Image (tube, rainbow, N blue to C red; front, side, top):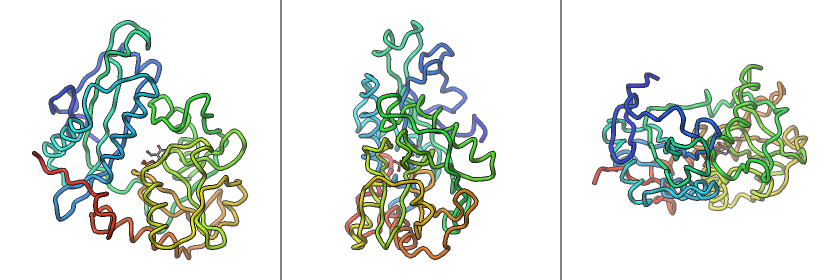
Length: 304
Ligand code: PMP
């Protein structure tokens, strides 16, 4: 990706990415004190539409508040900024990256908390993890997911991604595409950039938020779609050994969308995935605004 080739909304205006600059002494760069979101938008009959933009902007504000940062824009203003940057990009589908960070000044987080800035990048980002339906290779990581009383995984903080990136890097270096991290109790937490679902005995299961995970918006959509389908679904702690006996393992997240796991720790899983197939078909409709009862998940980004 060429740094000048996509637009960024920053401090109220859309500029080319190479003009959306920050001072090298922002404490965000030094201490990881920033929060962000990733939002996919899709080409739909109503023009480019962001999947659950309202929920993403809500989580952005919650994350910011968890780090004592007050975003100096309303959700409406942020949504308009998203519409503006998508319009300038000319893209009909792609990815939005709102980032909340501290302005430069004294080299201390505490001194800069009232100087909060926002940037929103927009670029094309086709399917992230290879073939989502054929399934990907995943490795259980030796890196433990940060504990909620260390760097809270429920907060989408820039600093929190050191933990996730260490796991992902090892997985990629070993020939896999994603890592599944365990929590300090040794139970399944989440992937580096997605939530984990398994099917055991026909029941769909995913770790509850209390296991120390990001409250994923795609995860929430999967729970709702499973409910709509009448699939029995439960949020419960999951032992790593259950991943091996599950009839299906899948990942859910904005970047990965819904992706099946084909190989876990070099062990091939069944290619027969009835629950995944149904959920994936519904998800594909939902992002278009075409899933009955869930039309409002696709939020049109047509300019004002
Ligand atoms: N867990 C982590 C660590 C993530 O980075 C993501 C991606 N944002 C998710 C889960 C999935 O969240 P969402 O569906 O809201 O993108």
